[in-house]
Amino acid sequence: MHGFQLSRALFWAVIAFLALLALRPWIDGWLIDREAAPRAVTARGDLAADEQSTIAIFESVSPSVVFITTTEELVNRWTPDPNVVRRGTGSGFVWDGQRHIVTNWHVIAEASAAWVRLADQRIFRAEMIGKSPAHDLAVLRISGAWQAPKPIPIGRSADLRVGQKVFAIGNPFGFDYSLTAGLVSALDRTIYNERSGEIRGLIQTDATINPGNSGGPLIDSAGRLIGINTAIFSTSGTFSGIGFAVPVDTINRVVPQLIARGRYIRPRIGITTDDAISRPILRQLGLEGVLVLGVGPDSPAAVAGLIDTRVSPTGEILPGDVIQQLDGQPVKEMADLIEILEGYQVGDRVRLAIERDGHSIEVEIHLGGESVRWD
Image 1 (spheres, rainbow, N blue to C red):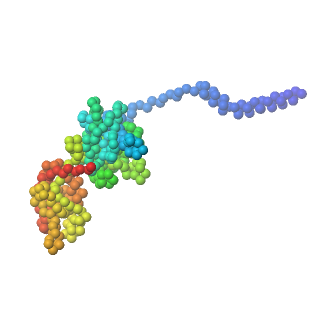
Image 2: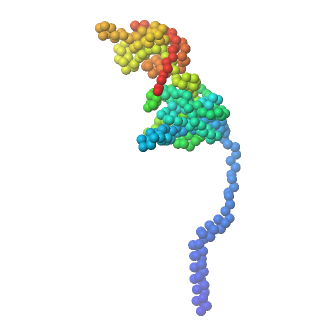
Image 3: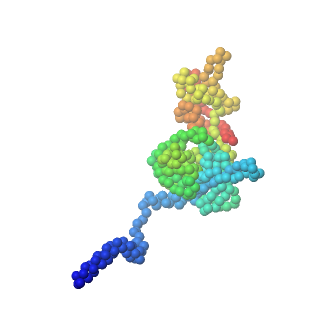
């Protein structure tokens, strides 16, 4: 009888032990939960020097960056009133103390209205002041009496070097005031824009640029504007490591004209030319350059005595002057001539190196102005 009781006690002891083993995770969790407390924070020390620099750049420049929303009026044939729909978003930056905002032309193109939100969350309606689709630039002005945020500091792009650190600030996908960092990947790039045509002289960067970043500033490590983010190269519509920005030297040349005149006045010499027509003629002559097909009456070219291309009574083509250099810079096609002239102002004097009837001559010309209208 005594042995039976011992066996029974051992049996229940084993059962209790097994139950304890099964319940142990729950018991341990219950005990841990009752004793849980926040962990001690590990001290990190000072931020790294490059981190402090990046933070300082963002905090200094971001108040000058704005968020732009555009709307469009759509006609509804079933009601007398148009429907106002949101068209898109983009970025921009404060240019001066006169409430001017600079952005990309494609950000506000075809929009019925544009609204600008400042860093302090105030929202203002903006009016179009000027545009230059050839440079993908536009200037807005905010309506209403208020004190504008400080203008963005202006740098230079002529002395940029591949490998410099850059920062992009903007509103990608509507997420406002986002900062990304990267490098200057290349300079003097050319891209084709459906609205603007060919845009030359761009900065290439690997700083992340996504839809909504367009119109935002590209900043150097000194916190200065060096470009305006304008496009990405992508097959999916999202960033793939290649972004482009219009250089600040172009912005600083074009924007004052947009503010003063509402349009960009391109320096000109007053000739007519066409690479497709000129190319076979120049190939026969064994020359490179821009063949002058026509000279505008009373134009700078006419005053300087440039000779145009003519056709004799017998149908023979009599080639005119071939422009090969402008102030020592080589000219191989019309795009080269236009790009070089972009660096000058109306009224400047330049020297053209010309091939005329087998002789090389130089001609001084006084640049005129041409109002380029895009509407």
